Length: 458
Image 1 (cartoon, one colour):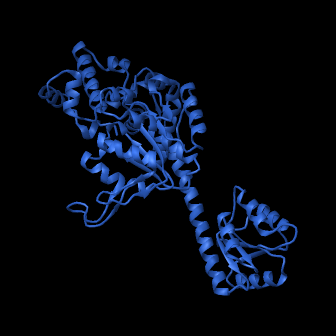
Image 2 (tube, rainbow, N blue to C red; image 1 turned 90 degrees about the horizontal axis):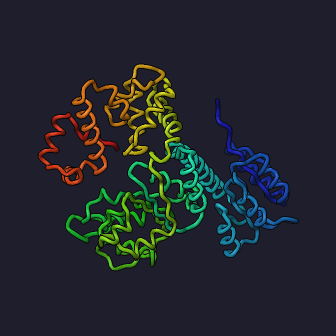
């Protein structure tokens, strides 16, 4: 089917201008509507949803700027090219500030008209494409849950999002802190601007300042070109500082300065640069305890913690496990071309008995693995051992174990996997936490065939 031609509305009280524009546009294959005054033009904008509007400034009853203001208040608003026979810089500036795409003076030049039309329609196409992508991303990052604990968090998000206040999201690993950060951004006035995510724990301490603030050419050996940092990339939008509790004390001071002064310096530069960003941060650490230990700045904490949001762990909202499982099954089957499967009530009940130390991330991995490995359209509790005990309950462990030794070994394997994931597969920290020698931990990993590649929860 041939796509329809773009529909362009001309709103002008001069018939001669309307006729000239119509001839230019129709010759290029565009469809054209006409209105002789502002009120009639507004009615056509609402009822016919044109792709572009040419709008005269001087008209009886309702002038062009009033029409422009009303168009900009619409949910579906086309780009507007303002036209004036008495153009002044002040009028052009005001029209642009009110949201006009372009400003032209009469008499109109054909080439200038067509160039502006092409650019405006391209801008509209990109805007619609971005809106579609946002909807797709919105589904990808949808936060599933209707438990009282989650409803409280979502209510707080709705109140906080439209403001410019900094937000600190706390909660265990895998609870969905990133999803909450994206929700705050998607519901804010910065929606059209960048959302830049920074994992502070993944950047080496000697590089994080460079990553956040950028560097000038020649700032250090190997800096052959200047680099824009994350704060500049997020200008006008939102920067999400994930795992901020792992940020070095030195870098904390520079982030505090950005929050206080809205200024920063690239590495190797003395020039102050202004930035307009909203800062959302997240951590699975107790920052107040970190302050007492001297590893986190109290003044930065107060700056970050203007609006605190705590995301509860999955074990405190087990009524959300059923909807989450259904969501993960649907997404996984659609993305991989699998025939749709479902979990029985018995299987959901078994999953609800487990504590889920890896939270939603662990549940998602468990669901996906079961969907792949279980040779049944309806997944029962008996299929859950295929989770290799990363997502199995104690009841399943008992069911699979015929002897006390077997149960102990399976339980020990599950315990080690959970602790390794809790500490990011850092062998030294895990060994210290479970009070065993690193050499003994390595022996256990070999004994139970535990590998990071297979068992890490990502």
